[in-house]
Length: 397
Ligand SMILES: NC(=O)c1ccc[n+]([C@@H]2O[C@H](COP(=O)([O-])OP(=O)(O)OC[C@H]3O[C@@H](n4cnc5c(N)ncnc54)[C@H](O)[C@@H]3O)[C@@H](O)[C@H]2O)c1
Image 1 (cartoon, rainbow, N blue to C red):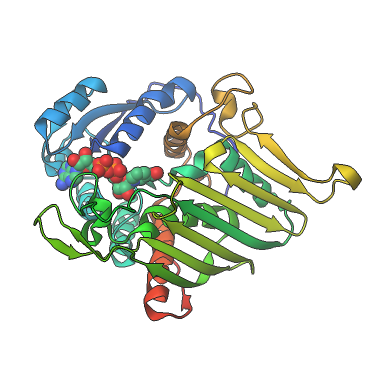
Image 2: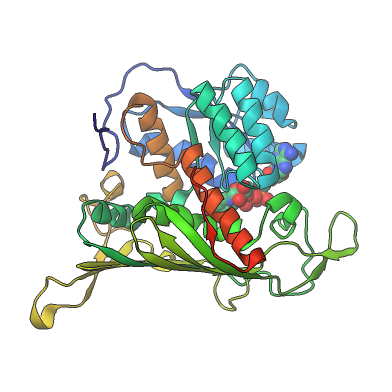
């Protein structure tokens, strides 16, 4: 029997269900984004099981206390193992650097906790496969925070492609450009700079930025089957904050790859932290036989739309401002025409996860561990293709 597909936000009526008590690990950038989502979601998406930020964990007691006060969190732990073992927690939200995701997730399964894990799923596919095996055996609900798909314009692109409106798809192209690591004086490792340390991050732009592009691409356009890639590390040595000594840099500073999708379309992906002037420019474009779509994070409420069926001198690119009641998620917020932002993508991700708890048989619009493993395996294949200088077949999750 075909799975029920949900194309809009859940509309489950409220009851007296107990709150979903969440324990958050990590109070940095994502810790704040998720704490905000946990606070906001119930105000705008009614009828969901109510999430409560029950406890937070971080290593610095002072920072932890400040975070807990700011976000009204009752309990604090400085050891994540204690947080995971707490009996007053139903779900754990993992917002720590990538090298800790697997260990924490496996401990969550042992303690019967649902898991919301930041991306990338793990350091590599081998770790990710262990995590998938554990959560699927336990049947515990699980999500990975690939948040961009929950922006109204990106979700609308998904709906348009899923309805078959583009006809045969020929091309997918995506970029994620930044410029924050150009200085050779920037050290590697430690708070704020763990992304430059391969032992903690797993990879550079491939796992950090391209993973987002790959998640969106696979969600909208299906599986990627093979890749060819090149990577570059422009600054070969940086001082490590742990040793104070110069050490080789083992992450990819930039990566460009070609890909073939299962549906026959071809793709170009590029990411770098050396594109001077760009801070977080995520863009994608999809070209089909009948229509094309394009999106740009800097103008995140708009979806560019070209329809070849429009005749004569009116044919051209139009821009859909995705803020109307008809657009995904938008009608739950303000009046038409008023914009949403980056933070709303996390609120919507949580809304989908909570809706899935009530309707487990419906097709998920959020990425679970298995979907995120598929993305991880594309990242692994990209890095292998760059190392080997040849096309690599992508293992399927
Ligand atoms: N979805 C997105 O758009 C997005 C954006 C940024 C980061 N991320 C991901 O989120 C994760 C965290 O990134 P961030 O930018 O928030 O990093 P961050 O450096 O801002 O915060 C990391 C937090 O983890 C804590 N931490 C580290 N090790 C710990 C340990 N052993 N026990 C307890 N706490 C520990 C740190 O103290 C800090 O509070 C990473 O996996 C990253 O890839 C996702």
